Image 1: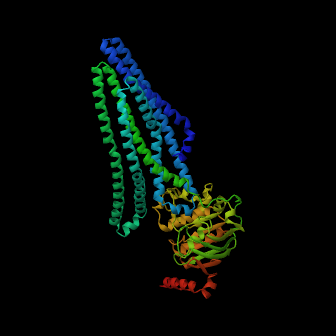
Image 2: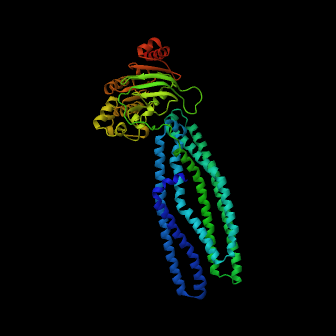
Amino acid sequence: MKKLAVYMKPYWKTAVLAPVMMLLEVVMDLLQPTLMASIIDRGIANGDMDYIIRTGLLMVGVAAIGMLGGAGCTLCSSIASQSFGTDLRLEMFRRIQTFSFDNLDKFNTASLITRLTSDVMQVQTVALAMMRMLVRAPLLSIGGIIMALAINPGLALILLFTVPLLVVTLAVVIKKGFPLFSAVQKKLDRLNAVMRENLTGVRVVKAFVRSGFEQERFGAANSDLRSITVRASRMVGMTMPVMMLIMNLSMVAVVWFGGLRVHAGGMQIGQVMAFINYMVQILFSLMMLAFMLIMVSRAKASVERINEVLDTDVRIKDSVNADAEPIQAGQVDFDNVSFRYEGAGGAPVLKNITFSASAGETVAILGSTGSGKSTLVNLLPRFYEPSEGHIRVDGRDLKDIKLSALRQSISLVLQESILFTGTIRENIRWGDSQASEEAIVEAAKAAQAHDFIVSFPDGYETLLGQRGVNLSGGQKQRLSIARALLKKPRILVLDDSTSAVDMVTEARIQAALKERLAGTTVFVVAQRISSVLEADKILVLEDGEIMDMGTHHELLLRCPVYQDIYHSQIGEEVV
């Protein structure tokens, strides 16, 4: 929790004022039993009505001041804790945005969502409670003990037996409860993962009639969460009966021994009543403290999960000597590059990749599934770092270019077309937030998207559902291409980005690319050989290695792998 305290620092004034206001409320609460005792022992015993009224009005005033203190504490603690949670959540989100793909591979999406929501909420709730209950409970307990000792030190000896029993009970609960609370958050991660996969892939689930299977999978994750939560709740639930038993036995002891002292003339009835009130305050404050510490114990698991995100070392970041000079030409050189995913066994995904792409060239990458095509182009914007070798752009090693400058010069259209909730115009404008309406329309026309966009009643103002759910696969791909073209990059990567469009539309897109991006270096990852026929250079990948490279005609003459791909696809197309 100490590491996260820095996010409370901007709100230290309200964070400090909250306990001060709580102290005011506690002092007022501690005065009430003494005032009540004086009414009984002096006012009622002597029949002094004026004293009763004066003291009663004083009690009302004290209660009003206490109420103001409590309300002020609630207001200040709420402002501080909510602001703390907001800043912490924002910092986590910012941190996640800086993660390389290697970092993201360590955290599944559902876990990150849980950490940003549930875990931060747990910590935020504890921060609120620490400024209220964690201040009120000790102050009320200590103040109650002092007042009880002032009334009758001998009767206060009962606390010597009561407090240790409560402390032992609390220690046992915390020791056994913490592992369970950690397990609860992990089970919640699992439930979120199943739910997210199911909602994202709902069309596949329905297409394969697997609703029953998914319900069973969700039910299993849900049951696991219920079981561990019940165990944790049972552990916490046992605390209340035990502590209530200890408190009630303490009350019986106070009434018994207090009654004997009243009978012997050593105490007055009002003092016994005040003593009982202080005992109740002490014991309830200890119970409050117990539940507060249980909350802290549960939040500790969340703090550890939050710190895992904040403490993650971002592997891919700007080097000390990196410069922000943008890419000018787009010359790309791979020099003996190999790559292996972190922690993966077996052979590297890419092995000894060496080739050059001149500025303005179109380089196609062809190969079977799993040959390393997408991995190769993911190295260009430094989503991953090569395990060996160097990648240079315009003669500069990628590590010597600031990430912002590098990625600003590269546009990617990934295999999965990712669109965001909003209008079509807003999605295209992701490529350039300052782009004019004319530039947006031109990019859409080049991507062969303009015609279907204007066919919608709202045109470019058409609202897209989550992940572009109200568009076809081909339409989403064309919008993604338009977004990339609007950026006017020096390097363009098309990762199997026309797989969902027909060959005529694909040909038109390729022609538009040549016209619009004449000086741009283009990398085309493709499964379909028709997508690479006009490329200046074709790389044929097989098991992470370049089997051959050249133009279509050169490869057709000498490369058996390329020949097999070509003849198999052409044969299918003739049929």
